[in-house]
Image (cartoon, rainbow, N blue to C red; front, side):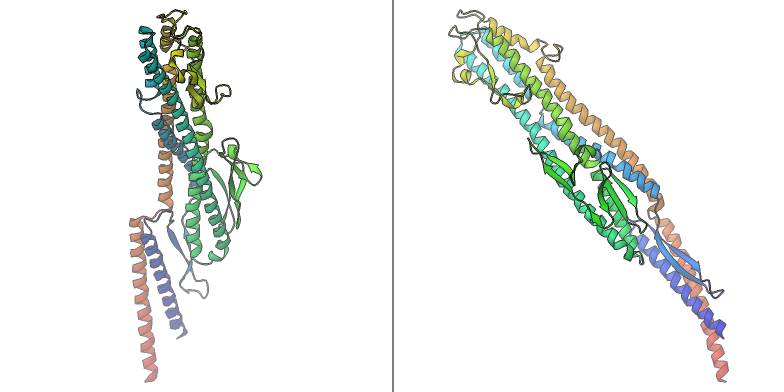
Length: 458
């Protein structure tokens, strides 16, 4: 009699175990498209005592490959860095305008105006055209410099927003670390681990980070050169602190400036664009503006104006540049010429009708005055445009390469951690058959018990 009751208990326990397996399989199927979900596996174990005690659920675990997870966290920042640079430089490229319709066109119009003045050196209309063309050229330099600075400001704003997101994610990772010890006793710990993995991946997209696993399933996170971002249940904020002179943000981890330490992810890409790429384009633009002004002023100063007086500067600056820095933003036609364009020096000698100075300035368009006398002024602008386009295309190519590698690692991870509907269908059938067999076993034992009980009543 006790043996039959034990068998009944064993059958009931087995039914519960198979039902649990069906439920976990259903959970896997329902989360097949859930981002970050790792498939669950039910572990069964033989009931040790008494012998023949049947089966019980030992636990549920997520299927993960820690090596692939680490490879993803190392690869993802490379792709997002290049993607960020590519997107930002595409905007910079657009801000330079179309070829033949921006600064290069203004240069051509300026030298054309001096060529026309050389044909009619005493013409008031020609002098007005020179003044207007000079103002348009200076304005084009000003606007291009302003747009580039605006691109830097946009990158800085995005950087500050990204730092805020990093801090928010770090706080949530710390909360998960605090909740895991209690949650590990239930299936809730697996859900937290899935959320943790998704958060770490997002962190890696934003900035290259280091991770150190904890025994309870939590994780410590570092940023930069090992600066603490999350330690246990504690999160340490990264601050974006405005710095002089432009007010751009420096990244502070406590008392440490880690701006130069963050080289990956969205943050690394934004820092590169803000602090390296755009400043190099601005430096080239300033050099072009400075050389344009110096070359024109040099020729203009050797000539004579309509009144027979020696020519002064054609171009000047609204604020004196530091070296060449700020030349593009401050370039202008000298206010004296704006007020009286008869001061434009077209003559090479103090005689009415001479055009030597105007011809010399018009000839500057073909003279190699840049980069050690190896490039013309138009070449200088072309080199700036080429540099931006080349850098943007290089970032696009690098982005595509890294994204391909990331997809391949993701595919490998999905083979391990992803949900296969075919596999889950087989598991569902397996558990279903096992449940049916145990139900038949349970029913048989119950019938035998009923027969035995009826025989005792007789």
